[in-house]
Image 1 (tube, one colour):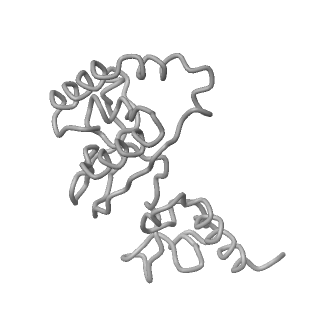
Image 2 (cartoon, rainbow, N blue to C red):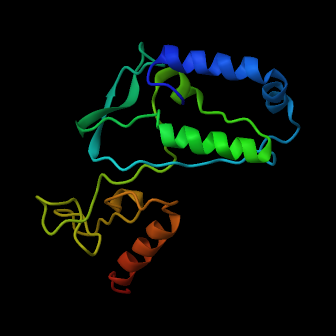
Length: 176
């Protein structure tokens, strides 16, 4: 989402739409959008944690739901100048148009498809939720073997990391 503020992002969107209206119209009317699209993923390392809470959300202020709040660290940013530059260069090479998600455009909120952590491995209950064999401290027989056990973003789709960790955890469970 090119621009630090909503106004800057909307101005940049308007500039791009006016510069190439036919190209942007073509993206809205293409028959098979998924076959005609390339998704670029750009990540920036930053330390921080999220806290999940029940309560009102921007979309449902009257009934509430699950919401996340930054609980320490640097807030993630949707505007990353290098990511915009890379997307623009790629679009130029393939005669395409760069686009972003509406949440990034309107709210400046970056998106992720892979939520990780929350029940990380630690040497003891003060350092983590699970032990090195994925057993939850204080709850015999309860294991965590999904993305919650991944303590840091591996920088790629975490499916294979999660699978490997789950297989390792299962190897520690004695057969019956």
